Length: 250
Image 1 (cartoon, rainbow, N blue to C red):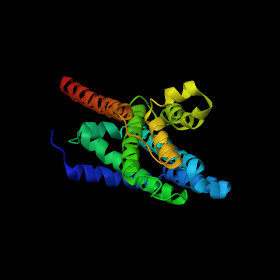
Image 2 (image 1 turned 60 degrees about the horizontal axis):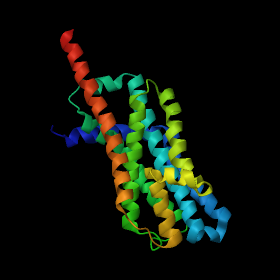
Image 3 (image 1 turned 30 degrees about the vertical axis):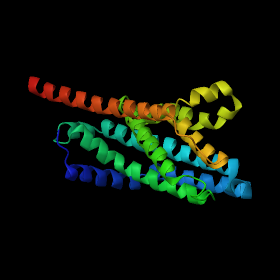
Image 4 (image 1 turned 90 degrees about the vertical axis):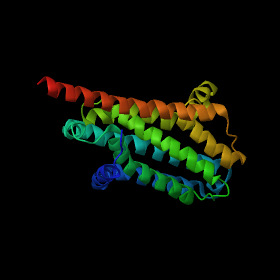
């Protein structure tokens, strides 16, 4: 299978334009930044270091990566299905990998830039957070969230249904890691999610001064990534093959 950079770029520019025209999509990462700024202001100096600063930053990162990414990837694709523009792409020369790379790049770039801005507005310094580990952890989590959004849209027949279905993983992956300190059973369960590992990384790096990478966490991150990259790609390929077969039969 060959991959065309021109096709990826064309899809990227089209999706980027549509993203900036949709105010609700753009407001999600903006909300994450404002969220951190407000909490930082309320908690004043407490949030500029230590556990409080880590908690504020983890809230913003979870909001940005989980809520923004899933929303920015699920609703546009579901809308394309609803308007039948996705069928046109499936029957064109654009393959699944080209489509998903091109369409995920706007959400990916917006989220990455926002993650960097969140550290700045949180009042923390890069000395308190290992920049290499932070970027690796947030990049993997960003791609995973985007692909979860794609998976939701694959099984949604309309934009509204995709929005409703997105609420379940949004709550589970973004909200529960915040409250796991109140329940040890919940904490153990959340530690098997990529968002839980990401929250642990931030709180331990800032609050405790270090985070110990281990096989368990790395394996969990990779499993989540592989599973949710595979599902939409296989579904796109299957529907493309089935669509072409139906055309031949007719």
